[in-house]
Image (cartoon, rainbow, N blue to C red; front, side, top):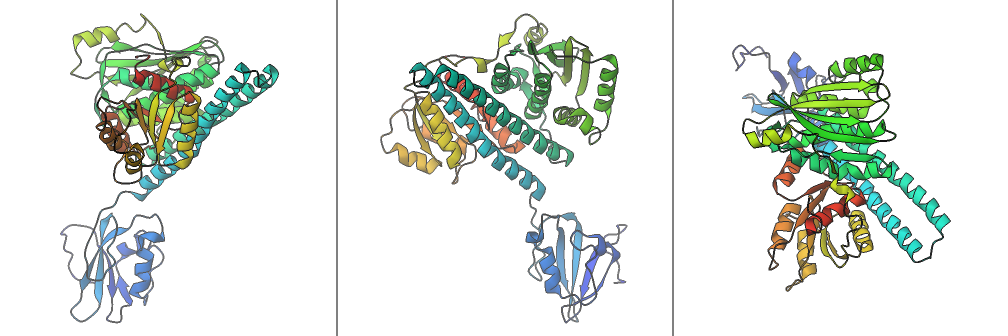
Length: 487
């Protein structure tokens, strides 16, 4: 234990020394603060007992790298590096294999799994709504009973949406504050972010009798498009919560070398004192003041800091509130795009999610690939309610088997991102589309929150909807892809 250190000028290494009998004889102070070993080291401990403690299955802890050095007179020295990873527990094997952060995997898996039953419930509510409408049309359900049922359905739908929003927000906030969410800064067309957001949130406004308007913008911005979309989703959700009548407007203005993306609402607004208090909370460091801000604005504040974006808020009591986020314009932005984005007040467009509700999509053949049986059954029921002919499968291999050697043409393929087998949803859509004599549009429907997977899905070129998806948003996306109502 008194020998020289290999790393000149470095801190004392974490060492465990074992005698010829395989029991712990000595250790350095640095070893006493290692994950899993704190407070556990005692002279005479068997090496096997320490190996059991260091097994990854002992808990989702960060396990430091270990090297095993044999001593000439018998016994061994375990040397631990500072960086954490998995440990090879075979004596004499200095292997160090890096593994992903277990907390990251835990949050991603839990978030995905929680979204599955919510997705099925949301789709089944849409199916039941359609059956109630059909019952009234065929005089099988009395008008009074229909009204009661519709009110109940709306309450159920709002409860599901509230649950979805909380699940999204809580997991995103934990990932953000744990340092598990890293931005991927690239050049993006901001209009794609605006339209995806409109498609997702418009049904919530329709249920509340509010108008949601999105003004198209041709500007190119440099940021992480997925995190920007989540940030704007938080601002829109906050506006919806505080708006009892009127509308919410999402639009953009040029401000020098930045694009000011604004969310206006016609809600209650804020007094000067409450506005000052809100600005104070928004200026606090991430991790402070979350209770005062609420989940949506806490997440908005954290994402703005993560992306290095300035967040502004203005309000007037009784007249509404405006939140704005300032995003850098890409250096690749052309003059034509800048001029277009500089006039956001010219026209407001209704969200595409409000369209397609009456468009006839019956007799449409749709292939659905979804590995969760509950969600697959709900999708089949909802699409069947709309008159579509649906073939369902839980993997790419099963889909190919269901299609047979001479498959009939399908009008659309909807696939989950994660699937059983080697092929994910992107690969499944591409390969199956090659079986037909003409192009087949595809759509990704996922509950995944892993940023890398979501970026891959967006770069695939296929539209991406998140579970749980509102039935109206799903229908609008189907209509748009079929070409009946181009966006």
